Amino acid sequence: MAYLVLVRHGQSEWNALGLWTGQEDVALTEQGRAEARAAAEHLRDITLHKAYASGLSRAQQTLEEIKSALSHTELETTHHDALNERHYGDYQAKNKWEIKDTIGEEEFTKLRRTWDHPVPNGETLKDVHARVLPYYQETILEDLKEGKNVIVAAHGNTLRALMKDLDEVDDDHVHELEIGTGEVVMYEINEDGSVGNKQVLNQGGKA
View 1 (cartoon, one colour):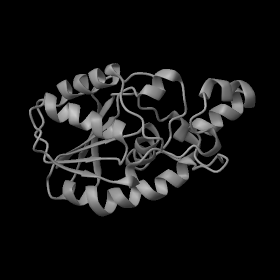
View 2 (cartoon, rainbow, N blue to C red):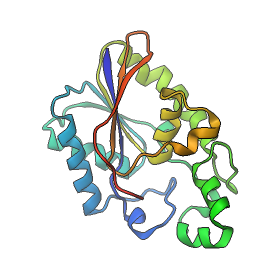
View 3 (cartoon, rainbow, N blue to C red):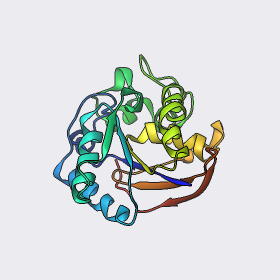
View 4 (spheres, helix red, strand yellow):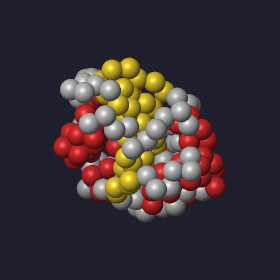
């Protein structure tokens, strides 16, 4: 058995402004860095063997804050674009609350949370799942099957897409999956790759 630790990045500069960040490369705020350090406190009793982060700065900065807080800066780390946030197409870099006012609450909720609702020139959550899950199965899961405890620092939609599979959530209920900024979710992964116990170790921020 091994532990899979999922951490959503801390608050970014655009989270604070209410902008749809998507695949724009935006740094953490000081609050975001503090959220990452707070997340680390829930991991002090776990020996981490491997780390993964997306190709975007906010996830990498979150992971570095955690590694520093745990005095574990030498942890083997891989960055990969498969873990990048969902691309929000025409809505990327725009104020999400202004978009909500324009398209209405029902359409806005479908856009943000449902499985396969289209985004103009962007990705659906189904699209994100199609790139995240193979990377998990072919790379991260192999580490877990070897008994290595793994931490993954990524993004709200990236982690929701992965949690859909880990939690065996059907398409119609994927909107119920949430993970806040700086939130830590830990799974026990058995030697055969199956999922055991799940724990939410802290309450993340809203963004």
